[in-house]
Amino acid sequence: MAMREVIAAPSVRALALEKGIDLNALARDLGRTTIAREDLERGPPAAAPTSDTSYWQVDHASYGPVETQPMSRFAQVSAANLSAANAQIPQVTHHDRADVSAIESFRKSLKPEAEARGVRLTGLAFHVMALARALRDYPRFNASLSADGKSLILKNYVHIGIAVDTEHGLMVPVLCDADKKGLWQIAADIADLATRAQSRKIGPDEMGGGSMTITNLGGIGGHAFTPIVNPPEVAILGITRTEMTPQWDGTAFQPVPMVPLDLSYDHRVINGAEAARFTSRLCALLADPRRLMI
Image (cartoon, rainbow, N blue to C red; front, side, top):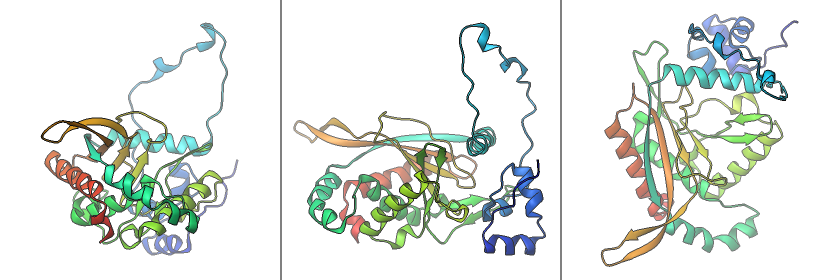
């Protein structure tokens, strides 16, 4: 069966022409029809693992009734990318918790204004603002490792990927220039990206160029997990459900809402001390939202 026409933004086609890259051949190698700028800059795809997995071939039906559901093309591509990232990137996850009592109080005070604006103001908007500020403070996290691993590409922009769980698979649209936007604009952008992702109206050019990705499970549950770095980014921030925990104030234990943060990072670029400092900065920003408003 002939492959469908390659989907690529005009800027991507121009760059491919400049680099002498055959988009049709690249699409065949990647096993998909959408090509983004990152695909042109990351080099040829890595060879598939050569380890023997023949023992995975099991006749499950011999043990009882089964049902086979085909994986969508989108899910297959996502699975291949995640497998490659997990196999090739030495990942470490740093766990911490942030006090969000001030954010929740501030968010509650803004509820009438949010309703008047027609904007749903969630905690995720504050996380995006805090991450954007931290990426400016720690530029090594806002970088990508070159394909040959010999240089670090530092980005002078802050684009935050927002992982969205959809019926057709996980999508990561990118919220651009997060460091230059205010709280209301970020909240509106998050809602817009999530809505369009659910209806598959996110273009290929809106899913590339991220500085770092946020994957938020707070609305579902859990208290910690290990997110997989989304290459060519070098780190990813996971968020789970806010918990009311006892915190010592010097006199007695007080109930404080704490949100778990899980920062996975590429150990080739970032070391443990840097990850701890970065996460501490995030916690400090979230604990005092006034810093985000400056």
